[in-house]
Image (cartoon, rainbow over all chains, first blue to last red; front, side, top):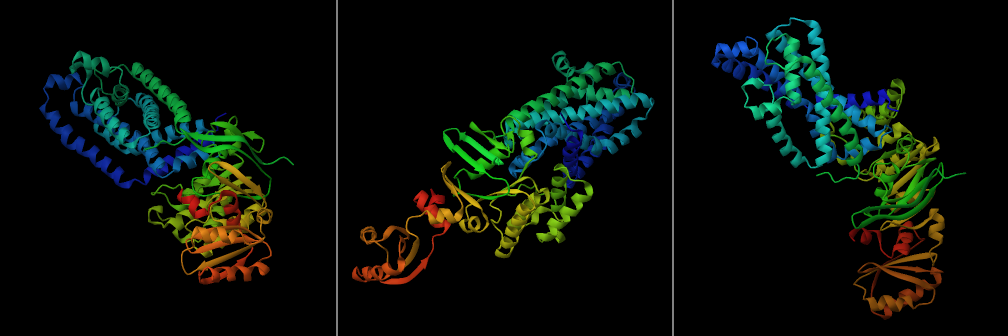
Length: 261
Length: 318
């Protein structure tokens, strides 16, 4: 049986560790502000009124919501790097030796990796909501709950990749490629309607699309180009379930026995 | 009484390398069990299997009543380990590391604070408790690692090379803490390649080499088991040819002769007082001036040499 106390102890450890990477946290916040203040504002001015209307009246709002999700993704994925850092210092062996089950360990790591990302991005999320405005608090709550699950799913995805690959160099390269594709083949930066069909087919099933569109819906952006909220919620729940489950299985099978590079 | 640890044909292979080879051991509750062997002998691999960090390729081990291959979660509730290499993230502080360890081991917040403070003070780390481990020396990191087990006080405590990188004052302090841990009810498995450490701390010692158990008994019994109750160490002014070593072995009551260094011989013999004049006479006859002669009783070094045919330094080089 899984002890929630143990899961929380593991999650709390990951949150505390994250707070120690002060430079990284400051840099990501600066990146977020630069994306909004520079890229978002300039591109917003470049777009035709019909495009602005299609994305809910203001591309800047559409973009701000998307960039929050990009930040949420990139910080939740950081748990994979933590695993390599720990492998490097032998901390993985230590974690495997403490009196908690493997399931509690990986569940705690997924939750810790997700929760710390959610907490870190929360001020930026609130700033984004301040810029966009809030029209329906209930919708926003649904969106927050979904994004909560989304961050756990991303952390589980990162753990799954890390323990499958066991090489920090390969992980770094692969994550760079995945990052480039998963962000660009989603609706974080632009709506599906403007993508070629073959891109759109992939973007429709991208968890970042679900996350970005549920946040837009939660913030009250009304556009026919946004994924239906229930599809997005379902997509996020599936993503979360799949990678948490996979993470647990792979973690148990692969993390033991060394072989970390 | 049933042993608290029992390994049954415990084996671990890494590809073609057999790190632990059908190991059968029994450790009694409440003893300090020395686990001796050179680097690469299979000590740490055995311990990692006991603590369920790695799975055996063959055989199994019982930690208390729990089979490590079938009930690893339950086995881990009885056992704790201070690793050979400190397992710490550079961004962490000693307080964070130890407080989390105490928490994950199920200590209440009050008990946690008390024990963490006690361990940090005892190990001379209290003033550094909130400093990043990044700036710590090897010895300081090692002390943080040892503190984990002192705080946890598990039923079975594994300490792997507990005093490596620790100065002599610190060594005695840690040895006393290990004894206290045992007195408070823990069974201690002490893995070390420092024979003196094993000798002064252990109730029983097992010597492992190339993954195989060579011998296991109380240090005194092991020392007594060596043929030739006395040891004479002779340092000569020049290198000793192997022919001289063979001639020396032919002297009555000399059991064995080992060249520890090119100009240093260890002679295992009976009734040393009577044989000593003949030995000095022999070296004069073969024109090998003697620099010094020292008589002693066998140590665990000698036991190790006896069972492996190698000095521990030689075994570590191989």
